[in-house]
Image (cartoon, rainbow, N blue to C red):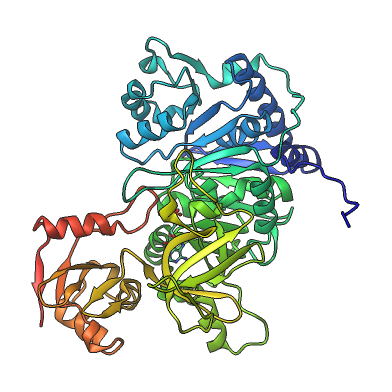
Amino acid sequence: MKSTMQHVPLAISRLLNQGSRFHATSTVVTWTGDGTRTLTYAQVGARSAQLAHALRGLGVDADQRVATFMFNNNEHLEAYLAVPSMGAVLHTLNIRLFPEQVSYIATHAEDHVVIVDGALVPVLSKILPDMPTVRHVIVTGGADGTVLKRPGVEVHAYEELLAAQPTEFKWPEIDEDDAAALCYTSGTTGNPKGVAYSHRSIWLHSMQVCTAEAFGFGPADKVLAVVPQFHAMSWGLPYAAFMSGASLVMPDRFLQAEPLVRMIEQERPTLAGAVPTIWADLLRYLDDHGGDISSLREVVVGGSAVPPTLMRAFLDRYGLRIVHAWGMTETSPLGSVARPPGGLDEQSEWEYRISQGRLPASVEGRLVGPGGEVLAHDGVSVGELEVRGNWVTGSYLHDPAPEKFDDGWLRTGDVGSLTPDGFLHLTDRAKDVIKSGGEWISSVELENHLMAHPDVVEASVVGVPDDHWGERPLATVVLRDGATADPAALREFLAARVARWQLPERWAIIEEVPKTSVGKFDKKALRASYAAGELDVTSLA
Ligand code: AMP
């Protein structure tokens, strides 16, 4: 029997209408450094219609790609809503990639238009000559775009372009399976790969973000979206905000701890999302300078493993609950969120909270061993996590990449275990796990222990070649000002926590752990520095 239910496409334009009409007074606040710019969702809706008319005028009449080269701000939100709603495809370019990667991605995606923040014009001007498909650049913030002028490329001012346009747009009917937005993986190995989200996948993902199992957005919430709109669609927070009526606070380019604390004190967000390195910076700032973050009900942190000491420190010193989550660009990105079951004692609850979390109903997971065998979800067996589901990609744009898929499942490259009740415990990335003799050493476990030492600000552990064992761990550590610990003391500290054979022999005290374009520890860069003899390594047997 077929169901009797209606089929109405899950279109982004419906999110736009919902937010701008029924949550007309919700706001998006953009931080400007010396103040804020506030727009209601009604205004964002009107400006999105104006942007769509303007883009039509520039020849965007089908599924052309409209790229953004922007921080998190209201204009970026307008592009998020207008571009897919008009049937075109939003392509969020990562502003922190190397120029040749940006031009590769823009050309691969065949970007027709680029909307750029005024502050990023100097960066884009160096890349634009190598973006042959781009015909129009739209500059926000009243900035001078003259430097971008070149044959074949027209430059427009965002506000001027919008001002002349009507504030209503008749959004077209779309197929919910059509691409709405495009985001490339950060591509630490090889060229970045394109993930094309559909209207449907974004819709379903937004509903998941709004559930209590995930972020629990409601109309009374105010969400500080620190995670960049160019990284995995800012975890879908902008769309979920328009769906639920939650207001948004956008930090623009002010991502350092000091302005973030001022933003929190002034705008009093109830929720926030960012990667662990941002929270680690914030914690150090708060410890040194103080600050009021009491408006935050909780924050969701993911993108790399959250050190349990960071979670503990925020809870004990600032009463702030960090909720650990896992995801990837390929999974829209929301995968698991660590919300423990009820009725547990404190210790058991903590064990759940430091895991990567439980997979939701729409994302199925399985573990696969080295021989391709499917492993038990017993909390003990360790293998590569594979996932499939309604907002998980099934291929890459113009690149089927069969090695990334296994019989319809996405190979995540993450290694860990799954408990019978669906909680994921990741031990490492497959390429970062240290293969010492026949044994595997989890770099993340060593890092988490090291970062629990009071003198340690950051620690990153990578596998380096070893004549005898094949690979052994190298510990690179950033020490606090005035720290007294040295490698021998740190090794002693670790010895009380992990098996002796896992203890690193090689140690380097460094100024800062290198970070990727999306703020994760750049282990590839660390391994390269070591190989080039650039690190001052202490050997301890
Ligand atoms: P990206 O596509 O840049 O967001 O990177 C996705 C990858 O980040 C995942 O495959 C994981 O390796 C890593 N990752 C994300 N969240 C976590 C987490 N909570 N714990 C450990 N690794 C994570």
